[in-house]
Image (cartoon, rainbow, N blue to C red; front, side, top):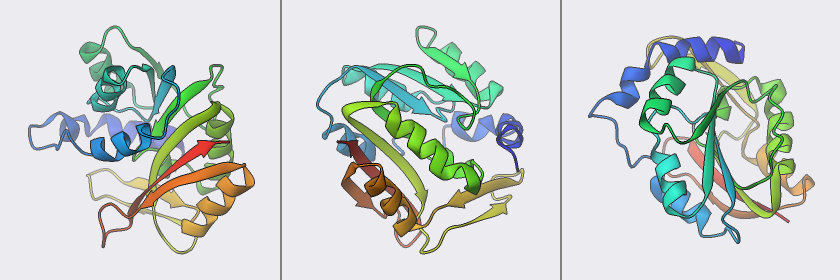
Amino acid sequence: MKPEDIGKAYNQITHIWNSEEFDINNGISQHKKAISFVKSRGNALDVGCGCTGRFIDLLQGEGFTPSGLDISDEMLNIARKKHPDIRFVQGDICECELSEKYDFITAWDSIWHIPLSEQRNVLTKLVESLNVGGVLIFSFGGTDEEGFHTNNFMGPEVYYSSLGLNGFLKLFIELGCIIRHLEFDQYPELHTYLVVEKA
């Protein structure tokens, strides 16, 4: 599946994140952990920001100037209504040029949808877009080996990919990053997040 197909899939399921059943605290404690490693509070970017605005609110409250990027126009329509003062861009992170530098980037439950062949390129792009001392948090499928699969758990078929645990660690070490935190935060599920700092 191409990222544009993921955007179309997510256009159909905005109600999941807009419902009262959605846990608006999902990922917040993990982001607070990541923010604790940040040295400067300038620009921040939420990649695959979705529609809830919960990370935008957190980042604003922590003194950052956040912006959001998502491939789903329906997600962004909702996000813009909730936060009319925030800059939101519709685009594919695989193709977008990030012209700014950031002190914090989050890609929570988002870049696991990009093609496996793009994982290294996108993560390299995100690290290169950080200021020195900037922090990246992202979640991924904590598999032992790299691979991809699709499922229709949320309704429409959606694609997932992962470099595997050691694949991600190897990449960030090659990029000269400091590994600050790694956690299987929904164990025994393979939902995993990593916090890295640009050295």
